[in-house]
Length: 383
Image (cartoon, rainbow, N blue to C red; front, side, top):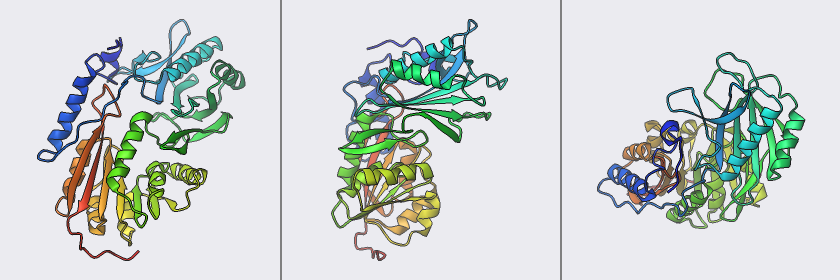
């Protein structure tokens, strides 16, 4: 067991000073209660539950003596906690964050003051590739430019050659959002690559990618196993992101359509299809609620992987009416997942429930649920 002096303040991982088995038991019980009366598989935990976050955000602040520090805000306050030694963040990202602070201090850069709207450095966003340890760095500023940007980039890349791209992002709005809409690539290609189950995926600044690559591979392999895909199957992947599940499914199915509201994710999904020589998958940038009500053909299998809020009742009703043979629902919020599945329980039978601990020492987890249509003789709409 390791010790974090900030655990009780930041709220990010309240359970880090408890035995990991206790945290797993709590999450198992949570899912068991949500799906009372149904068999829930034993939660899949991690062998090493530390430094699993390959995606980190940090905000900048400045001490009275001019030192730049980076960290997270103390829960329910605007006080910054130095998180450069965080036990759940990737150790390489922690080291790079330390270097960014040192270089910024040496260059006499100022942290952005949200109350006054002055200063420069606002946030840092880092992603680390699990497959090759490549690092993407985004520096978010609240000013017109980053003074000495070329020297700044040279110094952090010289200290950490694993940094393959550095992106400058502007966010001058009074908002809790980390990234603004405008970017400029200062170094590299503007993305890094990672691998899942032998497939390569590009990761950009504005696209979604799971934070825990070890458990992500477990989660996706479970979802695909539950789908029992055949070479004749057509597949719909809702909230497809950069096409991870879609492209993995395309290796087993006849055709896959991925739908995602974020157009930048769809751009990356298309490039990922080309990168992996997948020709039987297509991607559509469209709101899922709108799409599901307009869809005429019934897919054989539907993957659902929504944000924490889940889907609307209207969406689930439209999906039920569509009548796919099998649904695999992947969720980072079992509460909204269970709520959504209640809507379709009269026509769909839950087959398997598998919790996966993607977020050790927090209260959060992923849960994969597979369902089959009860009335298998229901007439399908033509493809």
